[in-house]
Amino acid sequence: MKKNCYRKNKKKRGKSLLAALGVILFVLLGTWAWGALTEDPFANTPLIRDKTSIRFKNFKPKLDHIEDGKYVTHFENGITATYTLNTNMQERVIAYFERYKVPYGAFVAISPKTGKIMALADYSARDPQKKDIVLQASYPAASLFKVITAAAALEARQISPDISIPYRGEVNRLKPDYWKENAKKDTLKMSMSEAFAKSNNIVFAKVAHRWLDVPTLLDYGERFQFNQKIPFESPIAISRMEINTDVGGLEKTAAGFGKVAISPLHAALITSTIANEGIMMAPCMIDFVSNAAGEKLYECSPKEITQAISSNTAHLLKEMMQKTVQSGTVKNIFRRRYREKSIRKISIGGKTGSLRGKEPKGRYTWFVAMAPIENPEIVVAAMVINDPVWHITAPQVAKEGLSAYFEGSSSSSSGGEFTR
Image (cartoon, rainbow, N blue to C red):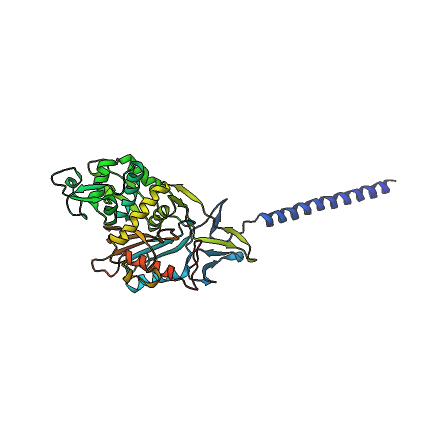
């Protein structure tokens, strides 16, 4: 009797053990299956994904591998990042920098409607190890800041771009007495629109002195994302803007002589805002990320950062920028007979800037532009830092980039909604 009971208990224990092993196996298999389903596909890559965006972690793409006309980077696990850049424009501009051995050069091109980066090129003959020139914000904004001043005057104070402003002195100089009203001495006149095109420092100092104040100008600077963090796949240094509250601080800043530092990428974004009806789009350079099977794991989609200004103000600024090319500071460089065939009939608007800087030391030239002016599909920003003896300046770099884009190449890949 006892023997039979023992056998029955043994059978029960055997069944219990098998059941327990089954449960453990089920849990292990379930855990493995769940882990396989939820495993981060970017785990062994320098890519970090959140709900709506993606970014690099301690990584800068080399942009030295092209497939099907686009730059790509292959990571582990079969992950591939495909970039938005236009390969023809990117390589043309870098070759242009190299040809003239530019001490420091940067060039950015963006689709204003989508924020997709078409070019992100930098170069330094003086310091070949210098990295991320396009993303650093140690460079004086110079007269590019007149864009912010004009936006504030047009929108906050409803000043007409055609208003005639009396002044005295040389347009490229700025002395405290010049922006003070003096009916007897102010014998010259210029509209704000013409002053923008010709980068008249005195008129813009007078615009600020007469119609603006520190809080208003600071507000419009921050609308255009000065002192703000800008989202991007790689870290962008914050563009800093300060206005001294002492005598002349407002006027000097408004004319482009203030404590304002900017990155080339940010300069392009400001111009894109004007080109895109006053809306600043978030920049992106990763078009999409796919796995080994070709399935897209991420794709860049247009995202608004802010509505910086009204569409009407943006339209007025576009007209002022067109005058810069037609009759202003770059009229000689952009004369139609001096343009490449690809941009000879393209309407272009822009703004120049020039100033001596210390980080790094040299003569800084800027040019931001959009084209075609009627419905901009590309915006560019170029910066060149030259030695006392120099060969090219920023407007020439911008013209080279625009020529490359509009000539259209079978190897090019536009980051915007147009392919040329």
